[in-house]
Image 1 (cartoon, rainbow, N blue to C red):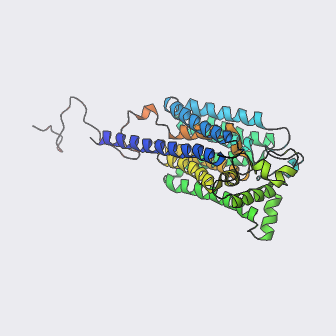
Image 2 (cartoon, helix red, strand yellow; image 1 turned 180 degrees about the horizontal axis):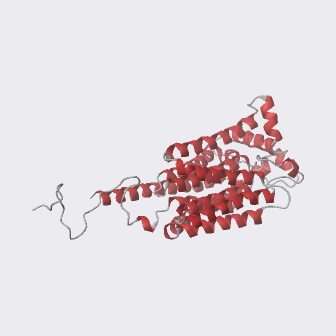
Image 3 (tube, rainbow, N blue to C red; image 1 turned 90 degrees about the vertical axis):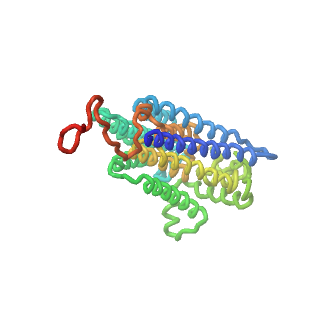
Amino acid sequence: MAAPAVRSDARERGAFTDAAGVVVLGGCAVWSLVAAAGREARPEGVLLAVLAVAGSYACGRICGSLLPVAAASAAACGALALAVLLHPDHGLPGDLPGAAASRSFGSTGATAALLALAAGAACCAAWAARPRGPRVALRLLALLVAATGLVLGSVAGFAAALGVLLCSLAAARMRRRAAVLAGFTLATGLVVGGSWAVAEDALPHGLTVSLEGQLTVNRVPLWRDALDLAEAHPVRGAGPDRFGRLSPTAQQTPHSAGKPHSAPMQLAAEQGVVGVALLGSAFGWMLYGLWRSPRETPVVLTAGAALTAVAALAGVGNALSFTAVTAGAGALAGLATARRLSDDGDTRAPGVATAKAPARGRRPRAPTGRPFP
């Protein structure tokens, strides 16, 4: 009776994770409508992002159950192709004309995020593959993704993809996924907190000047405008998609995208503290789903590294403003939390061995080697 109990417990954990996802994503959609009520706001962008995450997560769960290796490989190739197509001729998405010379790790965008997701999907496929040949080929694909970042001139994309590949290789020696996922959460918090401290000018002057020099010319002023709007409208924010009309820096900047190039600060300005809390809850839900995932720990930690890279890029760039990135993040999370059909026949809990049943037709023997009477 232990095997059915293990299977039932695993399904209950999966059901709870899915229910939590429905609550979090539903809250994001509803709050965007609340923040837009009575204003000339446009919540369509947030609703589209929520729909992209939910739909791609469901597709990832289905495809990951049926074809875990093929689905992850296809996701890697698709993300790589989109990264090449979305990369502009000069600069990263969201950079200003003439800012290409100041590009660095701080200048992030959709290309860098898609490269991180492509590397993560390729490494997940490698861990899911059984033969050695496909594993090596898929890891070479992840290395090709990182090299593509250099070819495209995306230093952030190269660093993110290479970091995901290295984390995936190191995941083979890690057994406590909870501790590593907690580390990923801490790393994301440090990136977001660091950008917030730069905008508030709370760091030492020399460090602030050094960090500002790594960013595009107008990024820090945009962050400060976002914090000013958040202080003026702390609960509901100024309304979705209104930052460009209310930010003095965005209005005075030619070819401005009308965004502060930081997802937490944009939500703080447009949807208040509740919007920021919901964004953090969405990221926490993905990591929680990975923690409770029935997949192997290396697959879980590889996906967690890729999602953390995307979260870090979104903290200092406009990565989440692109539907391809939000859909890719949802698909990778779904692939890494899918229960493979081949696992349904194995009722053992992870890391728990079961005793061998005696062969059919044979009588159990006594310690002396003679059969029992």
